[in-house]
Amino acid sequence: MPSYRPSFKSSNQTPKQTNFTQNSRNVMEMLVAEEVEKQIESLPVKTASFIKSSEVAAYALNRLPSLYATSQKGWQKQWHHGKTELCQKITMAVGQGIVAVQRDPLRVNDPLRFQGDNKAMEALDKLKSVLQREDLSWENVTDVVEQTLINTSRGRITWRRVSTSDNDTFDWEKHRL
Image 1 (cartoon, rainbow, N blue to C red):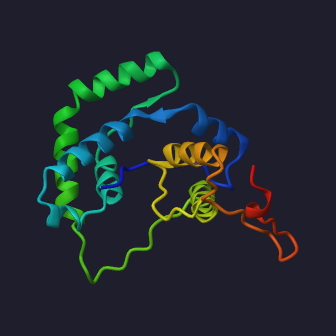
Image 2: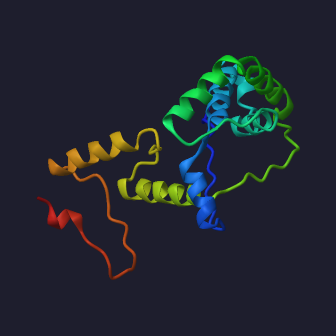
């Protein structure tokens, strides 16, 4: 089950808004993400497959207080507050969220897309193409790239260059080390 990963930066943000989103974090998002993952993992596989963790997190976050922090000390203080004093509220809000958002097959859902997320996914898709690895994901990208570099240094080229035009081709087989 993919984890909830908030992304706030938008291309319409003012410099002050961008500064705020880059220099502060809502600790509650992390606490809720952990709880969502924990509760979804405890469900039967078939039930869990019908639940979108991001929808559960959004539902719960809309019912819980924000715990913003701008420093390590502030983060630790908010984390402790959330883990001790708000633990039951978090558990209950996430449980209610799971019940509330179980996927209705007839319901149409057009998820939010953030520009930064799209660029990251485009980069991952291009890397999949270059490395010829459809199994490439953000979880394994470091290992796959490392192994590809090792293989290439040993003369085992298993990837191809993505050309930008028909005239911009390079035959890696002709230029092996």
